[in-house]
Amino acid sequence: MNSSASRNVVVTGATGNIGTSVLRALAEDPEVASIRGLARRAPDGTPPKTRWSQVDIGSEQAPLADLFAGADAVVHLAWAFQPTRDPARTWSTNVLGGIRVFEAVAAAGVPVLVHASSVGAYAPGPKDRAVDESWPTHGWPDAAYCREKAYLERALDVFERDHPQVRVVRMRPAFLFKRESASEQRRIFGGRLLPGPLARPELLHFLPDVPGLRVQALHTDDAAEAFRLALATEVRGAFNLAADPPLDADVLGELFGARPVRLPRTAARSAIAAAWGLHLLPASPHLFDAVLRLPLMDCARAHEELGWRPGWRPSRTSTEVLQEFLAGMREGAGAPTEPMRGRKAG
Image (cartoon, rainbow, N blue to C red; front, side):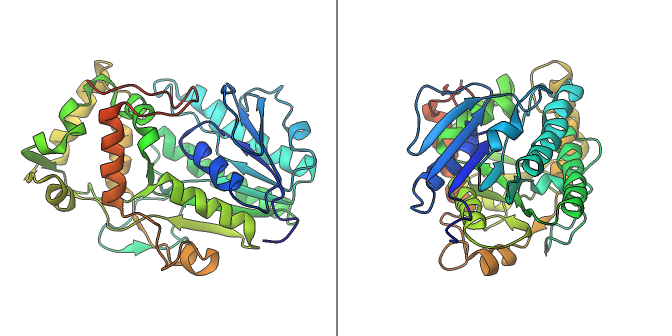
């Protein structure tokens, strides 16, 4: 690591799934001297090297440039998934707030910006082969999450053009899970509809096999390590982050000892749309549509240029990540921050 690359780091969204892992990775890095964690609600505990600042990036009055003053790098992770039924509010936080972060980086003269994009920023792509970082990032227009991630990619294009002195890195991780995120992610995506037996896969005898439902996953700590490495090197541009193998009905059926049963897309979507309409499900059917179309990602660039994990692979397979996550759901696992509070599945 260059001595000035990330000695003093500001992390937005520091109390969420990825933020708590990034704080831990940075705290363990001897080249990082101090961390300022930004969050709407500061937690009770404080990790090593960290101080908290309570701020809402969605507010026009947020003093971001002042908070960024003197930082060697800003890691932008802040993101609001809810309320999914009010896309204007998530747009205000995620897109307008993200642009405020970018502008404050320039105003404060911060030399490095690492932004958490997502596989969700990608345009629909193949499920039978992996695409690299040159795949178009137009998102799936019907899903607010994808629209917002894609829009920020365009905002960063303009930012990089106007501020070539800032080294910009875009991380595009797959779905991120860890034991401590189980309760938060259940609240965000599953709600009351999520069947309790999903936390105990041995009780599942059949598994829906929906065409196109083939996705990648990654342990949140492994993604956090990639963020740390991006600060430690002089890389620029985008990096795909995912673990093997891709998750589909065959892989999950073998993992859970369940028999895949073909379910048409229309039937699966109709059930999700009905639950959405009845306010039983917090995740919209439009997000389901997007997931069916997400491409598989090639992570060779992260392996080669970041040196991401020995052996060119993250430390856990996607199936191991999922097993850990489900164990966390059974146990009501969480973390001592407001977004990550624990709660058992019904």
